[in-house]
Length: 273
Length: 285
Image (cartoon, rainbow over the protein chains, first blue to last red):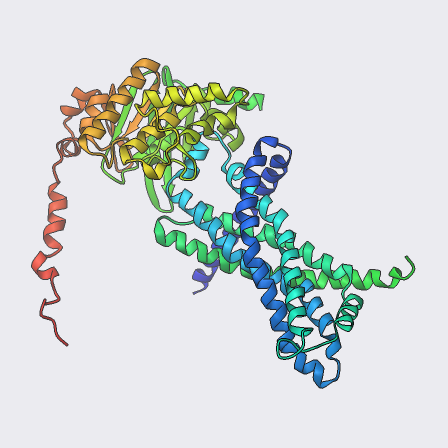
């Protein structure tokens, strides 16, 4: 029993080490790709596939998040006579937490799954070996453009999700019944403006860099290391999504702690500035 | 690095082999796939590695350009040790090799022309695209597929895919071409086209050729030298006549396509077909 557990721990530590090595090589490749204009077309192509084609699903996700929050929160606030503050509740939840996290989860499913399946299929059909056999570093050619595209465009996609979340919340809260709850538009926006700071929006968008990088790195690694056959590729896709999802939640928690600490430290001197 | 390089160049005494393997062992877990294999590939000659499926032929050929690193032993290219080089240095060495993979390994998302341009684009700064287009045309003409530039791999037959992969493998004018099962999965006529192409390339370009196959027709046709692998070891090495008359029973069984008594015994004890049909056709609950 102890032997089995020990073997499992050693295997898992080995996997963590290999993943760390993969991420390190990817970071070096990304830095080199940034200064090599020859690789820009590859990055543009991935930006189109990963970023532009994800805009509709991310916007739909954001809109439903905003609308659902309005539906769920209205009764609670109305009970206390504070329904005019619905805007601040919706908008701060959307821009700081739910927009970034749910947009990233949607990307982990759409983009991460596609990356793992594509690279996994290339792996089992020896296309990655073919890249190596022609004297090209597959991490620089295949992984770095995908990681860079995810890094750069996930924050932009989160802005789209935030925008649609804010609009979705507005269109459920402000119109007169039976379409909406008939909250005064001016009050809705003024409370929102008072409650949501640039800091909140910035934290949500900055998270996007890390979520994007994590999704791309995990998905590409799973594709590169997937086992042979259709089952191997399918399993790699599942593992990539689960690992990305957990990573997004863990990063979100870490960001929550760090951003709170930074905010608490610098908030007192804000009035002096 | 200079010191390492001098060290790497020393102690190779296998004549004028362009690629030399010394005491090469490769294991995957507890499974020993190659067991202390030593081999020198002669420059300008065609060496064919034969052996039953799963005997380690593909693993051997992937060590020649260090796509796989040995568990122990050494690999030399032009008297320079290469198995211990970092990947970025190996990438430069690998441009001296062309590799035809068993399934072709063409990039699905790229057209035929883009597949052939790929290695050129990676290693050269292209100033005049017309020259590259001419080069693609030339390479495709060599394999008899000029006019297929805008096709995608999905639209090609198995034989055409292998020929495009061959055109890609020779795009950088390599000194060594490695073929992994070049005729597997092809009908006899398409297989012979590939054999003729291998001979043509070897004759016209004078490249060193290493092919891995279990197709004896192909092996006899293209080989200057045949090596047989069995259980991770070389058990026969010589020209076609030497292999035909080799006294080892495993070699004779393999080249004549005969099953061994041991294998037949396994089949006998594994039960009859009648016993295997345990579910009666009129099975009812």
